[in-house]
Image 1 (tube, rainbow, N blue to C red):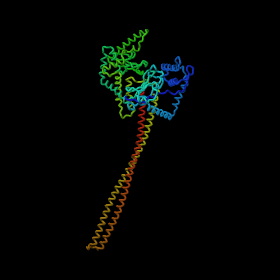
Image 2 (spheres, one colour):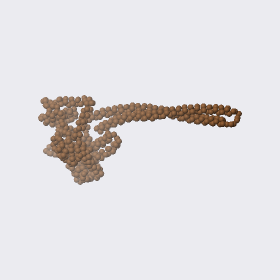
Image 3 (tube, helix red, strand yellow):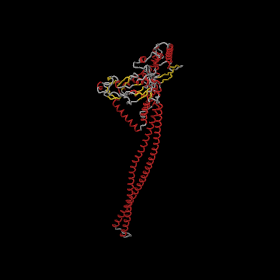
Image 4 (cartoon, one colour):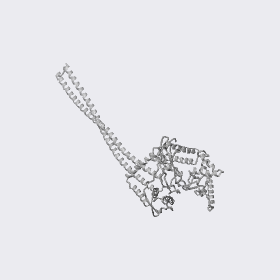
Amino acid sequence: MESLEHNGILVIDPPPYLGLTIIVRGSALHLTHLQEEMVLAWVKKLGTPYVEDPVFEKNFMTDFSKVLGVSPVLEASDVDFAEVIQVVEEERARKENMTPEEKKTDREERKVIREDLKEKYGFATVDGERMELGNYQTEPSGIFMGRGQHPLRGRWKQGASQRDITLNIDPEAAKRLEGDWKEICWAPENMWVAKWMDELTGKVKYIWLHDSTPIKQEREAAKFDKAVKVEKRIDEIREHIMNSLISEQPDRRMVAAACYLIDNLSLRVGDEKDPEEADTVGATTLRAEHLKFKTNSIVFDFLGKDSVPWHKEIEPPPDVYTVLKELHDNALERITSFNARKSKKTKADPKKIAQILPSVNSTHVNRFLSEVYPDLTAKVFRTYHASTIMREELKMSKAKKTDPEFIKKAAFKRANLEVARVMNHTKQAPQGWRGSADRYRDRIKKAEARVQKATADLKVQQTRFRKIKKKEDSDRAKKQELIKKKKDTLEKYKISVTSWRESRDKAKVTWDNARTQKSRTRSSKRKGTTTKKERLEEAQERIERSLDRLDKAEAGLTSARERYQNSKTSLEKHQQALVSWKEASAKRIAAGEKSVQIVKDRVTNAEHAKMKIEIDFTLAK
């Protein structure tokens, strides 16, 4: 890093001081701020299995007695917490009795505060680029819970103050920094932003850049690149282990046995545990009591990291079985010898004596593995196993890009859980699991009710839409039938117009011929049986008769044309009305389809919500 700028980290303040009083061995004691904080934490645990744990109670009461300045160490029965219990119960009741609106307002207010704090403390600027922090606050003071049968469970864990914290920040940004910090330093080669010593466990706590930041992604990528390299040379690595199991050197056989267990059982090396942590073991710290040999198999039974029970039976190759059996027998001999001289003073650690690989640690394992290639360590080996399992599980999940987000997340969680199971990372069920399980079942029941309601609503909406569509189809058919009839009528009137036109034209020809004939008669000098006058009168009668027929034909043609035009106008009007009706009908159908789709989406969302809760419940188990 060239530059690192931030606002420090958020230090959690203790709860406000209430000035409470307790009764200690019959005497009233007005509590200080720290004493009150400890008592409130203890009272909130009442009614849980924690306070029934003798170690938990003894550890807390030892620390509490020191803070009170009381001797000998108190027992829980020596203290009357009545006033504190009342305060805690009143606060619980207040929260339980809040209306939904009050709870919503409270959530929104807390959300605004969280967002403001994250905006101030949750980001750092690295080389000019704004990046998120993985965490941006210290742990509050409280009772140390530990994992499994941790020997420190119940001890008071004091939260860090600004004066306990060292910040990593570039010199220029440090000039603008506020606060009374323990130390300001500039360590550009490190990715931590803040660190402090946990006084209880003796471990250094860090605030890091978020895993998604580019700079951390690069380091993560490098770690997994090493795992890919293992995959390419896995056969060579395993051959190296198996060949060393038949070595003439006992120490080499021991290291090879440890590496076999690390490879095939995905065990940790085992010697990374702090002395004060719970009695958990790994490959190099397995004791004789953790292995049971059968004819062709070995049963492993011990507590892994975080006190997770580890039980598995394997049938190893003969060379592995022989070496482990020999090491186990040697451990039993050492135990027998140690027990025989128990009466004599000795500084020997009985657990160390019982180890089947007493002279092997992580340094030996890593040195042995590096013989294949320099970058290979037990940690890289475990990363390879975890990566391989993750890849295969994701492949088996058949999750697709088009699947809902929660299904893809569930596929990842399942794969991650399988990795955790194989790597023995699984946690014991939390103390309140039964209550959580009941809440999950209640949520599933409510989600099922929402699915059923949405499905019923969908049926109603689909029935309504079918009726709408049926009516629209019926109306369309009627309108189209009416237009067909009008087209037929128009065609009939068109034929009528043609017929009357032909009649008119024929009558006109007859009339014209009659007039021509009269004209010829007038100019004719022919003598016949009738006089010219008679012939002219007869011609005039023909003219009048033909003119009468022509007038009638003209009137018929005019009437036919009017009927045709009226029919055509009516048809066009109905056709235009049909076009408008179709547009309106399409909108009504689209609205109906949209209503159905909205309810369908509601059903889908309800089903997905139910599925998500069920998946979360399954994964939580």
